[in-house]
Length: 108
Image 1 (spheres, rainbow, N blue to C red):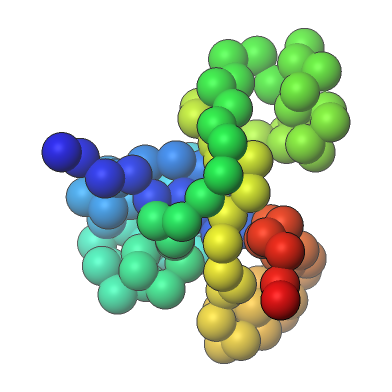
Image 2: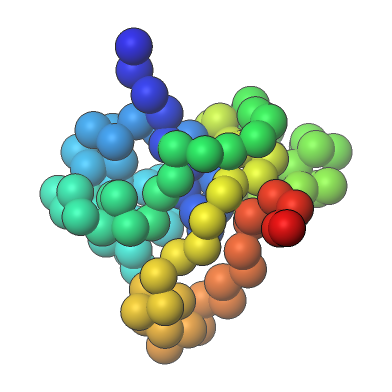
């Protein structure tokens, strides 16, 4: 069974091997997961809720609702459990990328 993982920043759905081999279509220029399994594990989660399959981001009301209208076509999670490590968040901020957690799980 192939287990998918979702990128914590964009909720993009791929397997560990796909993230390591191809990186991320939306954020490879700053997360640089391609060829870096450790970064793949740091920036992705296997715990998520809901799935969105998006073919035409610019025409999709769901993409607008989820604020992913500027992302590449693909499969995305509605919510991803977990947060990016503080060092990764700092690196994103230094590159002008604002990180907003996509974890909507209820904390008790």
